[in-house]
Image (cartoon, rainbow, N blue to C red; front, side, top):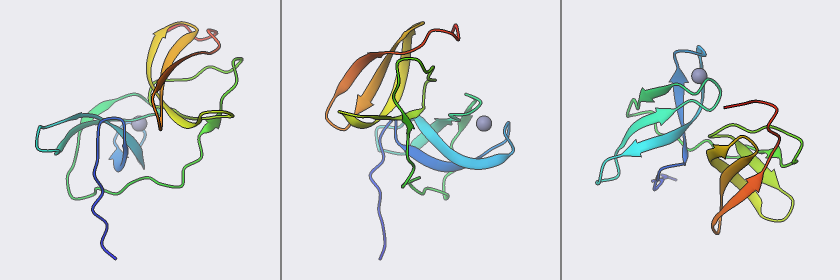
Length: 117
Ligand SMILES: [Zn+2]
């Protein structure tokens, strides 16, 4: 069965990260108007790299880290909220606050600010 994923910014695609030296799900950082992925960012090291087409594959079945206010999260990280479900950290607003995109909408959550941006 052929799968034609419709990708959008914030989705994950598999790409080799040259900084980390391994393949992982990268967050789509920018796209063209025609829906072509142009840049992706590595959730681990944060490096933003041009997207290599031809390797598009949704990184599915990834379970996010459980959401806890005592934890520190990074942009691009997938989290699992007990009420809202799986979400992706789209921005760290300030130490201790982050925007998380859930399936239905964006929510601003608090998190630990142990790690200054
Ligand atoms: Zn990396």
